[in-house]
Image 1 (cartoon, helix red, strand yellow):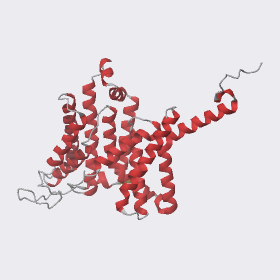
Image 2 (tube, one colour):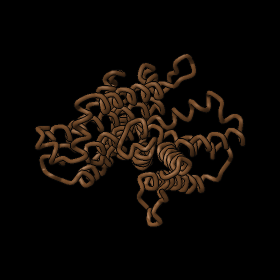
Image 3 (tube, helix red, strand yellow):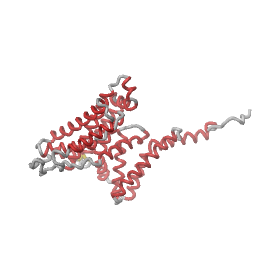
Image 4 (cartoon, one colour):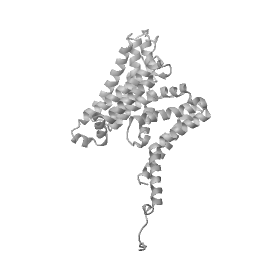
Length: 353
């Protein structure tokens, strides 16, 4: 029998057309999932060809060390994004934590572990403060954490009268800070495993693995994502949403304070300008993480890859002697292209134009 003339042919009507359609969909899905990774790989190839020293082991670990602080803060932001919030205070928490550690060491003559405890206590307290503002006083996340940002940015300046803090600093009361940074504390930021792997990279690796497991394989992580997806539904299902959201901000504050600890240990002083650029880079890393491997939601490995993407780009541009005033523009342009490519391809793969 002859086929009716009114019958509409579809790609599946012939094996060849069906095969082409399936290959096209597979290619689009691969581009969606790996778009940012492809751009990162292309950058590495370009930089390696133009400057062979880019692939030296020492330079690669230098990149990882440079992005470790930003990646840690980005992980904290990622946890709050997963819970439906947004922590804008991570940069100020890190800056205040490194000032607190420096104060304990050079003013109070405390030990390394006392400085560590002061850092973590400040971060936990700041996260708890954010959580209470948001869940008990119902202040919107961005406004609450923005207030904490300004509060801590000003608070860290008061004990030293706005000066950076190191041995020999004259305090507002006229006394001299004559304490020192002990080697045990400096090791957190300067030690190297096997004389190759910097301590901050090891800390980042440990935090990344731990938080990834918690977020992906524990009830706590699943509830956090559920609250971020639909807090009302999660609450009706029996989840104590307020307590989980507070816990998310406490975790973010603690991780940010760990970043501040590493800053103080690396530079050997309390730098009042340390947190100025951390927030934007951390937020960028967390948001870029949405596009890594097609996740389209906050995720810790994606955040770390986002931070590495920015670190590779800036390191390569520096090695190629690109003018400093062009670097931010190039960074922004490549991020926009990579993200636009990933999400536009994703819409096509899903059948949406």
